[in-house]
Amino acid sequence: MSIWCWLRTTTTTTSTTSTRPRSAAWLADRGVHHAIELDWWERHQVEGVEVTLVPAQHWSGRGVTDRMKTLWGGFAVLAPDCHLFFAGDTGYSRDFEDIRSHFAERQAAHAGGGFDIALLPIGAYELRWFMAGQHVNVHEAVKIQGDLGAKRSLGVHWGTFELTDEALDKPPRALGRLRAAEGIHENDFFVMAIGETRIVPRRATPAPILAPFRRSDAAADPGGH
Image 1 (cartoon, rainbow, N blue to C red):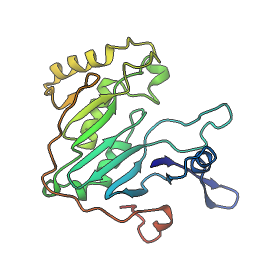
Image 2: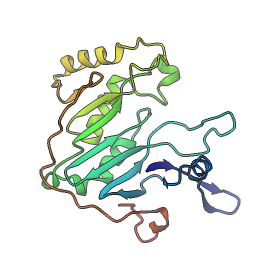
Image 3: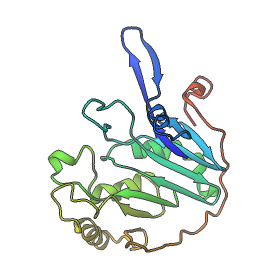
């Protein structure tokens, strides 16, 4: 099962909104027939686990002619015993406060609290004048953890390809210095070695799984909750 995002475009001359799926057809032409396209805040269930496409600050494009033709985003994955957040590629924005607000009722203290783990990017961020709009640095990743109210975070998006000016091993070293400076426990925001396994505690209170939501439901549910 693949979950892709789609673009919702607005035609200003007619003030109408049209949705144009792009990814599923491209995948189908290549033999992948089980792709689900989502707009921001739409959700889909996969074997009892709810997956919601959430906003991020980035751009899209796979070639020279398709820049900004599809959406980009992260995923909130809500299972009864674990809430996981995956930011994807992103710059820092207010989106993460909005995400926390969106799931606030289902992540109240009596319902088990915030995301049990957040996968947040910490690499490919220098030089800042060029990369800040699309890739967070370590300080911003820690801010995102706070914005989300996540219980713990795993630093990702570093150490594989030398995409930008910082050294490949700089992000985890910067994270270690920031933890020490701000009194953040090592288990609250960490990185993992290749092959390493960590166990995330089960959620104390199972969360209800909602029905799938599509943009066509918006009239009945304007808040998208």
